Length: 214
Image (cartoon, rainbow, N blue to C red; front, side):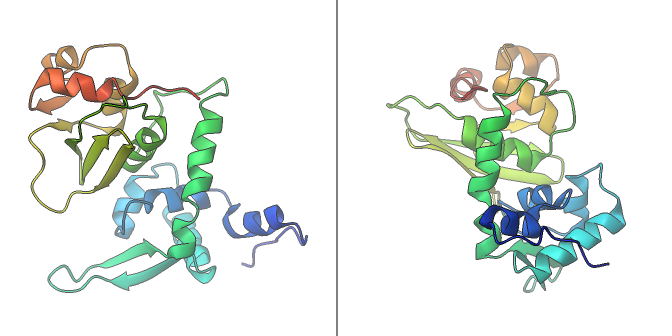
């Protein structure tokens, strides 16, 4: 079925013709940190029907925002990966996060995907000017990330090998509680809300660099 566009010369309307369908921008979000298999994209978007996800992926591929290909051996699995144009929507997603955090009604108890949390932290980081670079790991189900927190910000990437000594384990929601909530990390770890390897004081210093706000 052909999507009905806005039929306007406005550049904003043109952009919405490409990414304005429901779920489209969130599909791009799930791929922002690296390629994923269909099932992993689906896991990050539990509210989307499988046929709708297939339609959105096909439309975004037709628009040149992502590509579907097979990883080289030994992985040899089909994945979806953003093109340069697709990666260019990062600023759009970041801007929506900054705008959304200022609006009332946000419910942090609703599902937060692992990638969504990482992207949120990249935007909401407020590091000290003297922040010594700190390697941090995150394990959330089938998704693993490493990140560097330094004076310039927070840079997460998919984990390709061993995780750092300081690693958080949990769900997107439980780790969001650790990162943005008022309860000390050591207390959350002791209660089993999150898993933590490494020094708890260092972990607390890491999460203290993040806050929800403009």
